Length: 311
Image (cartoon, rainbow, N blue to C red; front, side, top):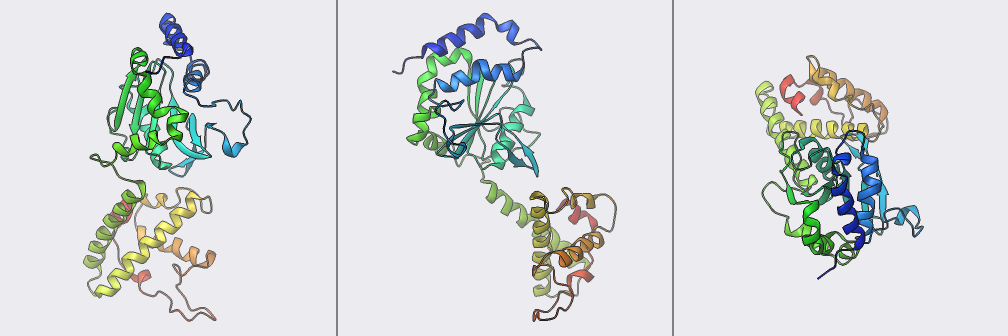
């Protein structure tokens, strides 16, 4: 039996004694983090404020760790790490936000962790503590309970402290208990790794585009159809990655959904890429010293706006 640390006993007592004040509007997230979340995880053995003086690479905890979400830099409140490797995020909310029911807070945390390929992450306002399986692709329409593996309140901490320690303490993560806990939740309905989900999405694009190309360009052979579908999708993905890395203007491709003649405008982007990148993906005219035949097929294709807008 693991005894409840005195600091946790004190935190629970202080929270309950000043419950009304902590639920008032003036009490904010920063105060909550400093007064409750930081000492809570310090009691679990994490060097939350780097008192050991480790180099940046080896800090246990990174505050507001920058990650890319939808091409934009976002910052989860905490990133907990072992040897510089991310293990889980924590997103903290002020106590007036009801973790059990707040759809936006759950989606925010799950989106952060999904983008970072983390299996689990935690949403807390100290009064509530929720653990989410972040391998399940988040959707804005999801309920707050979707993908939630564990839900505790401040009243559960005394009875279930050993359970919390056994999975989320620094020592437990070092010994692999966290990974075992995450693995135990894997394979449930709706779980998918981000790469698997992306590949599945690409497959749906291939089918969508192939159907439309075959309909609008009946003269295409099977080989030409397959080539066209793969080459167009590869080009879109290439340019989208360039956007995400800041090489191209962000949302440039997405701007094509406004208006008509999407393929003609998309083909213009492809032509610009041919001038800018030394890539076999974009090769539309003969070049000195290049033996590969240019692509004279895809620029003349007819493609409806609807499938391209969806992709």
